Amino acid sequence: MRVAAAVLGVAWAALIIAFAFAATSVAPNTASLVAVVAAAAIAGAAFLYAWREPGR
Image 1 (cartoon, one colour):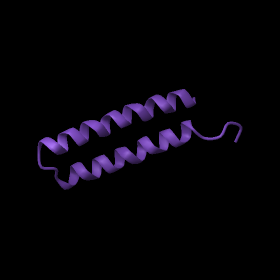
Image 2 (image 1 turned 135 degrees about the horizontal axis):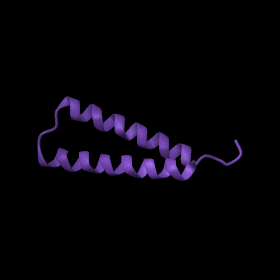
Image 3 (image 1 turned 60 degrees about the vertical axis):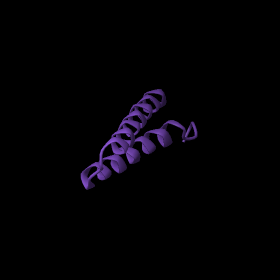
């Protein structure tokens, strides 16, 4: 299960990188910034779940 969470975290991180690339190529609007913050929160949660202490 933790491997799946790590893969999901990497996929979300790739999405954040895509948002960052798009933000540098065009002027970002409020909706784009809210979307990247939400994606960062989801990716962070997946990484934290994947790296939690085993047995808890």
